[in-house]
Amino acid sequence: MRSSATQSDLDNDFDHLDPSWIADPFPIWDEMRQNCPVAHTDKFNGVYFPTRYEDVRAIAYDTEHFSSRRLVVQVEPMDPPLIFPPITSDPPAHRAHRKLLLPLFTPDAIKRHEPHARAVCQELIGRLTGNQSCDGAADYARHIPVRIIAQMLGVPNQDADLFRRWIRELLELGITDPQMVAHATEEMCDYFAHAVDKRRKAPANDMITFLLRAEIDGQPLSNEHIVGTLRLLLIAGIDTTWSAIGACLWHLATHAQDRHRLVSARDLIPTAVEEFLRAYAPVTMAREVIKETKVGGCPVHPGQMVMLSFPAANRDPSVFEHADRVVIDRQNNGHVAFGLGIHRCIGSNLARMEIVVALQEWLAAFPQFELAPDAVVTWSMGTTRGPQQLPLRLG
Amino acid sequence: MRDKTRLFARIVGERCQGHARCVAIAPELFELDELGNAHARLHGLVPKGLEAKAWLAKANCPELALDILEQ
Ligand code: HEM
Ligand code: SF4
Image 1 (cartoon, rainbow over the protein chains, first blue to last red):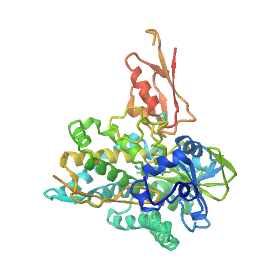
Image 2: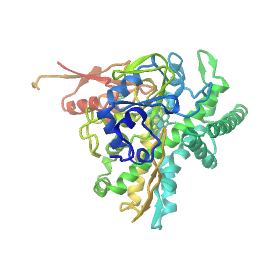
Image 3: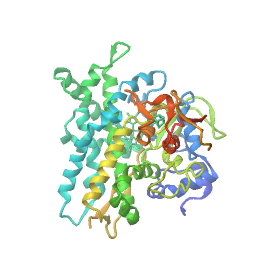
Image 4: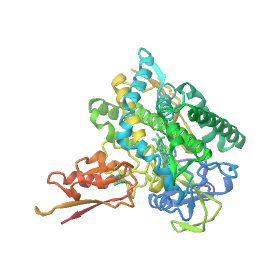
């Protein structure tokens, strides 16, 4: 439990950027779910934080009262908000924006990228072989999704450092620094506008070219739409998945029994990954209230934001037995780490493949790994939660 | 469950959002279309021996889009 805040602080003024929340949000959410299931803060122009599964679910399905046009809680929201179709699209336009992309992300389509993912993991591991220690986030997790999505989109993976900087500036530092957001956004727009121009002249077998040829109702997509979708795929495809891979490594580095079990029962890895996704779901989105309504009986007001904590929903004991325990062979696991309703994560099949491959390769190479002695583990804050720094002893 | 009971699996089309959990768990019973949304194979009939998989698929569908009927 936290000592720095009283109960009334949580009711009236929760603080999702508080260091105790960033380090270990789970007891805080449990307490909120019990005592104040729709918490509120006046900060950030007013934000609600529902922690019950049923409330999160109801909001995700209710596109009449909640809009996706603003998805991130920031001190100074952009006006007008930038578009990232389909994640910032509302019905009825959303459907067509999404449908376009779905065939590229089915399990069969994703299977074709598995050999590449495996080669990337093996290459990263190869660089670590012989070392006594490493950082599981900085030396491994962080490099995997960026290389896969860069190839799918058709941008050079040498630009990976640039992509990672943008993500950190947009999703973390930008929460409290609007100029950082504006600057990173401008750089991203220029970058993709340039990449699109290049493909117009020289088409290739990649998503940029795919989007240039795509049509909705017989019309090509606007440049703004194409660049917006590319920005989304880059951001959504990287930081989410490295956070998930990092959280899996953190769990296995700190729970030797689970690690032993996965080393000896490799077939259990996909089931365990679902449980890690439930327990350490990395992504918390938000919605803007656009019509007066109630959440779990609490009135919510237009113009304010509602955080859509899929991670807190996944820890609701009324839906998940022993919700606070990580049970790597959990059988009934309808977790909502990838969201619910019309915005269900398009990349879920890709993310699952990357996480499973990353763990398979890692455990085969370092079956004895554990947290380094005296390790200081730090976690990212805001939209995605995952280890930023994860010192490991490779064994 | 009576011995003669037969199970039928049904995907409620408008609820399915393509999480693909059902197909991962019971590929014998479900398949995905080109958009990644699920459909029951065999007109929904769950062959003997696959009942447990059908129930497991239902329990793992985040959208609660999977119904199982006992007939
Ligand atoms: C473990 C990794 C990931 C997690 C936990 C995750 C989580 C989510 C969540 C919760 C949403 C719903 C957002 C909302 O309701 O507002 C979402 C949407 C989305 N995700 Fe992911 N994601 C992951 C990886 C990926 C990857 C690898 C991609 C691929 C490029 C991706 C692309 C998208 C897109 C395009 C959407 C928007 C879908 C729509 O609005 O229709 N995600 N993701
Ligand atoms: S698990 Fe549910 S939502 Fe996912 S494909 Fe199957 S029926 Fe559809």
